[in-house]
Length: 128
Image (tube, rainbow, N blue to C red; front, side, top):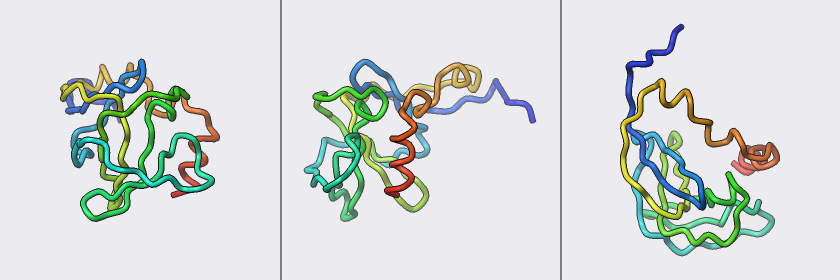
């Protein structure tokens, strides 16, 4: 099947350290100020812990640490993303806004986990 390069989708664009990341808008539940996070023992560096969001315990992933290994970037926003019946909060430096991107433009952008250490990806799947 051929990709429809005339199709477009809306994305929430965020900055984390020196990187931009895009979350498909249909998967974004909300953006918010960072909530208190309870750290969990023996978790990977990029997993800040869990936060109570709208009455549910939600894991919080530090995007700067996940994709760039950068420590010390203070997240200013949480972006909660629906993953089926679950949610994950991504801690980002700031939210830049919503952009409409064509499938052709998206094909040229590396995937979120493209540059991530494979051990981090394995840890996410194991912990889930």
